[in-house]
Image 1 (tube, rainbow, N blue to C red):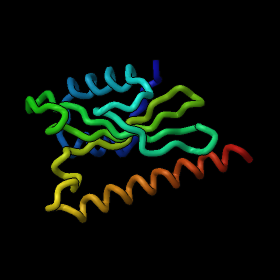
Image 2: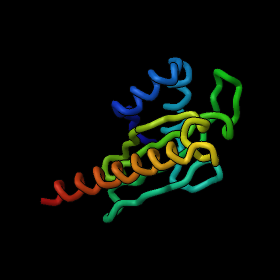
Image 3: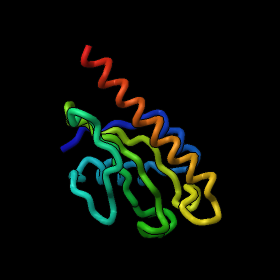
Length: 130
């Protein structure tokens, strides 16, 4: 079982999307029960050196709009393997992430966000080893 944490980015995304408390509880229940196995629903996109952190992306349904995984949300979460903690970091509607031909700039912004997140985690590792 993972310890659940929300980052300030996740809180900001939740407010922007108008996520209800019920959906927050569903996300917390799902994230803390999820394993580290890639499936069609979730995949790892980064594993840090020394296996300290992993960044995962998952497709989760939107229960409020009765949408399934494909029309629901994309969730970015970080596993801190040393502390057995999960940090829910970013959540977006799939339509606003730019994964269609119509929004390449949004896709680039998302990729830049992931790159910055990787750099941030690598700095944490570097500073922790000194």
